[in-house]
Image 1 (tube, rainbow, N blue to C red):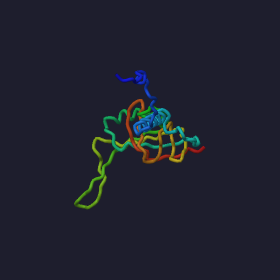
Image 2: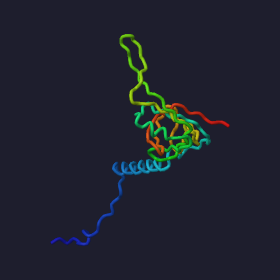
Image 3: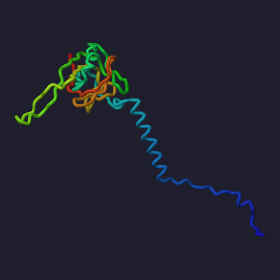
Image 4: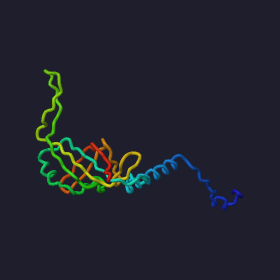
Length: 173
């Protein structure tokens, strides 16, 4: 038999903590999730300190089926328009205009591009007045960037749609 002390086997040596790559990746994932949550809850205007201004912007829906035009026609001046994703207020509708939709086609015999009516579709133009924050990237209405070329997903009490912003102007008194 060995004359060793049996109590040595009961003591566990103190381990030192070592930082490894997996720990670093977990910390980065937690930080990214926290930043995404803050962005979702606070919106785009979290860090904007721009001046408040009133704008008039126009949304164009180039093709909308004629069966939905009756819902569009119910929308009148003063109707609130909201973001269809976050339900933020995007302003108050000033006017709604419904026109015939056209498509470009090529006449190969003449060698020209012609505009022809697009059957069963219309074009809708909506003008909206809103309070915004002016920043370096354009205007922000409750966290939604409003600038020419930007797509706007929206809803009214009568229909839900999306279109492109085709004009933005500041309202000066």
